[in-house]
Image (tube, rainbow, N blue to C red; front, top):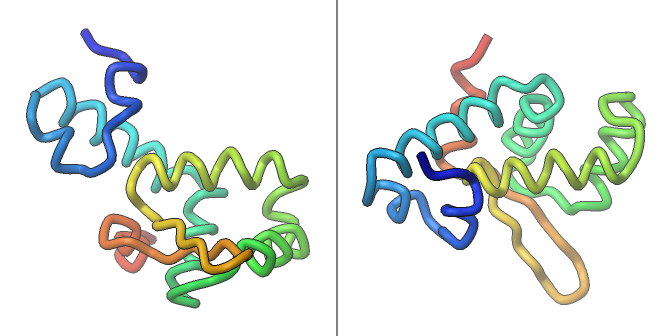
Length: 110
């Protein structure tokens, strides 16, 4: 059975659809992304704003005590990007996040 390292270079959901193992891996990754309380809250914030800067998102999460530090932020953001729930946009010297079609599932949760 393939593991995470077999899929680390995949850049789109379509690449996972080439094998049953890839589909299973992506599905598992996606469920872990949207069912985690911190990541779900991040998705809700980004979905509400449509696009938000990294600075503003981090500030909001820290102020609301959703996360305790920037390393926790980075881990969860990386997970959401890897699961294709959010898109990372780099504009000049600033990083922004926007919700993807996969991430819009938060509109239907709870």
